[in-house]
Length: 117
Figure 1: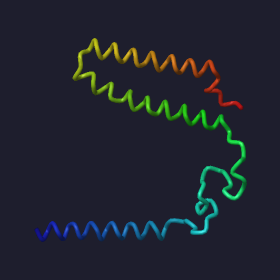
Figure 2: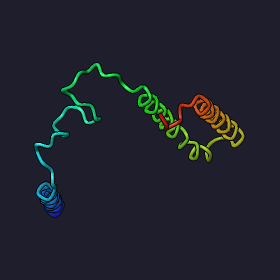
Figure 3: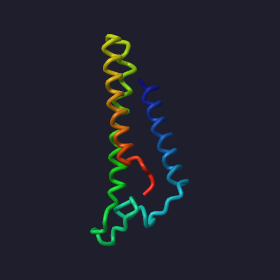
């Protein structure tokens, strides 16, 4: 029990030393203009808030979020393959990928994936 307590205490001391060294080595300024501002997205917080917002930026963000959620739905398909019926797994996987591809081709044909403005 004493050895375990000593080990935990030693780990806490080492972690504190590493954190103190990282604070000393880091080259951050406390008065960095960008870091103390409430917005870090490129907008000037002191200017008018009625500046037109780029709808293109908003659409690209939404498309990224949609594809990000789809990736989280695709990842479990691999692990489910071992526990489910192979025919049902294949049918649902192919149907899911067809829906993804139809959505991708629709956005491509509408020009939503064009990065040129």
